Every structure is written in C-alpha cells, then in structure tokens.
Image 1: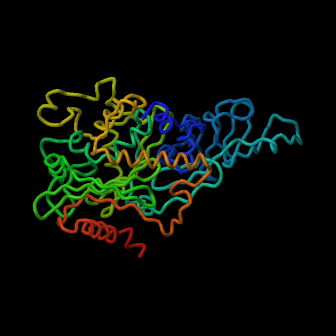
Image 2: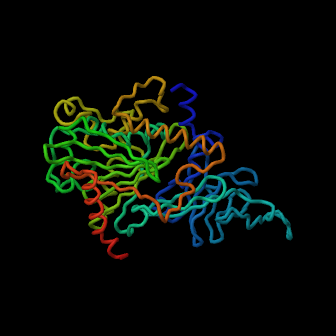
Image 3: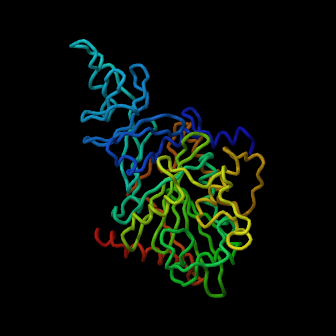
Length: 434
C-alpha cells in the first residue's frame, strides 16, 4: 500500500473518499448519559466538523455549531422550550434547524424565513444517540440485538483513543492478537468476571477463555461474506473430539460484534472525531440477566475520566507499564484492563498508521478482507452507487451472530449456530416479545 492509498481509506474530511462513505451510515455521536443533565446541550466533534447536540421537550436536535448570523458558538446557547437560542443576538433554532426568532430585527421582518441552520437526523438506541451526517435520506437502522433488546438488558459506554479510526477498528477484527496482547499467565475465578472481557469460561464448558487463548495461539481463521459485512470464524482444536469456536463480525462500515462472555455480547462502533482521534462506542447486550448498569459504569470509570472519557493510562505515563508485572502476570505489563492493551497497540502505531511499512501475514486475513471491502465500497460511493447495507431490505437481513463456545469438533459449523440460537431464544427479552 502506498501513501495515497493509505490516505484513501483513512482520511475522513467531508471531501475525503472515506469520509463521504462513512457519512452514508448512522454514526454514534454521544451517550444518552451525556445529555442527562440540567442543561442538555453538548458540543460534538465528528469527522473533523463541529456540531451542537441538544435536547428539550421536543426531543433531540443536532445542528452545525456556529450560528448562521455571525458565527457565534451555539454550544453556549440558551436551551429553551422552543429550541436553542444564540446568546450573541438571541436568534433561536428548532430541532430541524429552522430559525424561529430574530428578536433584534424590526417587527414584520422576514429574515427568519430566509435562514436555516444545517441540521441532522438523530435517534436514540440502547443508551447511544446516533446521527446521520450524510446527504439525502438516511438508511434504516438494522434490527440487531443491541437495538432490539429490552433496555434493561443493555449498557452503553465510550472511550477516547488518540489515533485514526481505521487502526482502532482493525484491532477488533483481528482474532490472533488476543492470544498475545491479552494473555494472562494465570486464570481468574469466573465468578469475578462480570463486566470483563476474556475472563469468563467459554459457553458449554468450564474452560477459562484466558486458558484457551494462552495455550492455543495458532487458530484457524475463516471469513464469510454477509449482508452486513463479514463473519469471522476462529477455531482452536482443543483435543481429538472438541473445538473452541469464537464467532465475531465486521459490521460495516466501522463496527464489530463480538462475544464478551457466555451471556453478553459487545457491539462497538469507531467514530472518527477527526483524522487523528476516535471514540469507541459500545453497547453491551445481555441474554440472561438484566444488566447491572451501575457496576458496569463504575468499572469503566476506574479507567476513563469524565467529561471527555479519556483513559487515565496513556502515552504520558507509559500506559502504566510495569516490568515486574510483564515478567510474572500479563503479556504487556500494562494491567488487566484489555482496553489499555488495545489502546497502546493502536496508538503506538502513530496517529495514522503508516501502512506502507507493514508486512501482513496469513493471520491477517481479516485485515485483508476488510480493506478490500472498504476500498470497493468507497469507490461505489464515489460512483454514486449504493454500498453495502445502504439499500438492503432489512426484513430479510442476515443478522450478526456472535458466541464463544466449546463444541464437538465434527460439525462445529452447525454446532456453534445451535448454541447461539438457543441462547438467543432463551433471552428474557426475546420471550417477552414472543
């Protein structure tokens, strides 16, 4: 890959090819929690552009941040029943960007009718506010489990990563890295694994996932094209009769769906703040018990600080690296929170990874598959065609399935599906809808 090709798939400005493509999909822009405050107004930066998000009795609104009068910052506006009012001259805008008042103008002025602030559709799903920042009508939201589950069974959070969105996404679709980057030398009690990735046992077994990753570091990897992107089947043969199967998904264009434990999956998006910074947004979906949101939030706030959701472990303190820990406890020496491991891995590549210097191997087949799909989709968007998912009949959509399970080796392709379908069928929020 040369430098021009790397720019083609990483840059996200409005005129950039990848930026145009990503704007054709719903993107997460804030947590509902961030507007659950007395003054529900928040400045938002996405794709290198500035927006203001607000909520009043009429619902959510997302507008360009600078007032169309003389460019003052609407993020400091007055939130009122009729909309958001600029504090410079009192101009007010509703959720649709309509100018509803210009109080300093003479009586009978028609100025309001000639002014409109760019606005963008927003919807709330499972604790995240999604926006459509592209042109024309937005596509339908897919009926994935993270959106259709009862809200009591979901939890949403986010975190800032100081690098380009693409390398942040690619770590999540790389099945091999977990055997190294997230290797723990000792297994923990599964009873203490709530809310932690790779700490529980695999479904249908008593085998800790940490043990599987540690002792079977050369998995077989296969990708299968789907309506939503592609599915990744990662298998590790444990013995003559059984196999460990981990099923994950690339959810196009900038998300993945992965298992966290036998009863919880993670659906995670990577929002480009600009070319050099990314927010990951995640919805954790439970198939058994209502989500303990207070504990989930408290766990994550041990690492991330508000209001920007920045990691307390970063370049400035070497991600908490400890040589003694690396020798005795973890592969990285950076603690037991895998978010820190991933953050180090992708931030250490540079703010935008220089892919002209990389050397990909057979174990990187998911990276190959995604980049091919991304390049093809960008070119389709440039040609005015509909890329993957944007024109799909969602009533017949092949939805992402995700599980971490031990099954008989013979027929594992069908065996993991049976386990996943059975778990979903038993979900309380599924039974309530039946």
